[in-house]
Length: 353
Image (cartoon, rainbow, N blue to C red; front, side):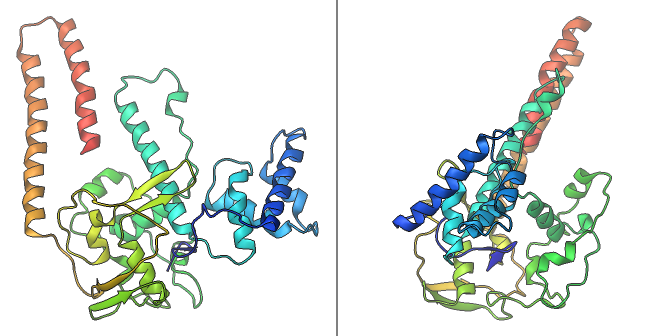
């Protein structure tokens, strides 16, 4: 299984360089960064790196190319080459399979968290002193999130292209666009049209992987199993995803069970979070039919109804509080003050909902 061309299986992006030969290659790449920092640019910018190595015949040209590709398109940080990416590039240059998909996903999780924090913070401000308050730097490939939305929210979906033989599934969205005036309205009204399993549906010139069979299966999974089934099993396991040594995010697939064709139960707390690279072994793993339409369990439905009642009560409490302010015998100046103080609370509640 691959995610946007990135493998789900393989060694961790944190895999060290263990031989002297690999370490010497890394040192040569690091030395190039030092040289470029002594130029007028004072940094190893993409363009300088490309000029330095492209068609140079250097013994580390392949590693340098992979470092540029990784830094710019896969695990981007800024517009410069970073040495933390060198071990991954060196492993890839020697044919070592690296699980890039979980690292890419960890980066997306990180940026989505940063985006949410910024939105919540801005919602508590009555005005912005300057445009810098709106600035936020996000580097992960968020185009994958856009495609995720197009695949599942039918009203947001542009007309897809016909996939040609040999093309990846993502080719159906190449150079497509759809203008939507009010995305919030579409999201709020998408309950019945949301597509939980778009990849389980027939698509011309696209072949189903083995875990999207017409009949349900019970399978055993270990490192020697079919790669497609092992990939599916890894996607079902609660894991720690590493983008780097400093960036770690938790992956909780049990919170979105319906996306895997499983009935959604109460998520609950994870008793154990596995390292993603830990060997996987299941004697009996259930793989649902791709034709099965998942739903929610009875206790999940009861919990959901209770949660909605609590949210409605909180909302009514805010509205009642505003009515009390308006009916009180207070001066217009005090009324304006109280009204301003209540708005941030309401906005924060709405965003958390």
